[in-house]
Image 1 (cartoon, rainbow, N blue to C red):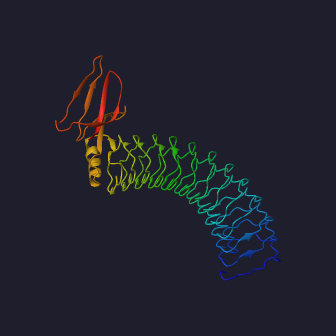
Image 2: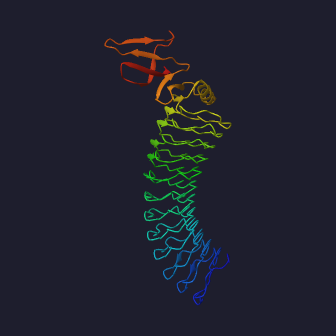
Image 3: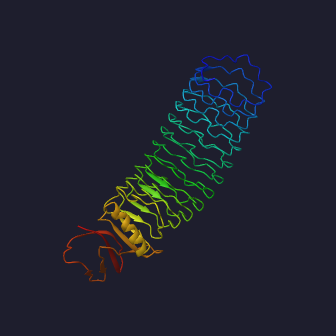
Length: 403
């Protein structure tokens, strides 16, 4: 029906209809459609009912009875001409899938789903994907206790300025790929209470969340995650990122994970186990402010690592496990001409104390009542910069660059 410009269904008797799957699917030339007289009391399936009705500018669903509907997937997918849509009276208590429900409805500026009963929904993937004109979206009352798929749920909701997902129950979710990808105007996002025990993929999860300045993921359980590719790629204003409890023992792909996180100064990846990671290409590419990177437990086996440190801060200090890791990281840094960068071996992997074992030398300060400086320096090196110091009776400065 893609060529239809006019369709009168006002006299349809739908009292006995149970299935409206794809009823107007692909009617892309319709600008007006009057379904206000439809009796939908017995309808159980509305999948793709208005899918692809990209020319519609108005749709009156105020008389729809959706009490018995179980499937609303793709229902308004690609209705990109609609600027408003009133679904506030929908009874969704029996709905089990809402995947792709409003996807590509890119002209919607508001959408009231605050009263949706989502207690039986298992799939919310792509639900609001590319609703790029939405400014506010209230999903704070969503019951997500049965949802197992949230892939791209808010992907490219690029105009959203607020999003409250604090109450989300994510205990059954296995897929969070691109969940918030492209939410460029969000300045805050609280996912600290997310239960991620069953999640297997987090790739692109926060990609291009340009305005986020902080993310606390310290409570994330990543025991089963296998992909973190581009997870924070493009988070250009991110300054604080807590990942200190990440278990990455099953992760295979970390390519582009922190690419273009250009405001990160320090990154604690001390808990990262990268033994099974095969892809690390551009992992820290474009982290131009990063001067401290702690990977003290990492055993590197990556086979794809091109430009791992491309365009990083030239004076970055990377803390590693041992001389083998030191040599591996040194090679990656040299590949992108980071000759001033240092690679520090952690003296005690668990305690967090560090020792410089690199082309640069160490300075020990024996801090008694009359402190004595002990230098082991090449005569040609006369000035230096300090990376850190620890106060006490014994003080160690780690020299990270010779000037």
